[in-house]
Image (cartoon, rainbow, N blue to C red; front, side, top):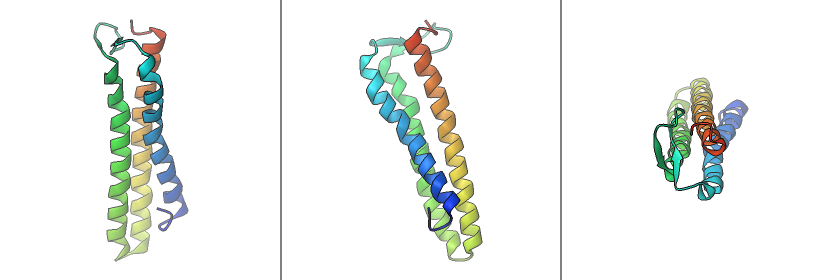
Length: 120
């Protein structure tokens, strides 16, 4: 993404980091959890600890998906106008950062509530 602008490049690094970080956290934390954990904030639904993998997988899918879509769209626009390619790359990567950050926050809150017994 740096070929379009520094901003798009840095945003792409942040988006990829935000997409990969929860997967790493999940791989480290989930094996130590009990088989059944509370899966909502009221504590009235219990599920497998492996359901906690859903938000990290979504963050990874959305982050990488938006990154790949950005590369394709920016390349399409670069043929006509480099300004439009830069604008597209920056806009898409801002969206990737916001989307992955929102999923990461939801995952962090869910993981926190499971680990502290807040939802139980």
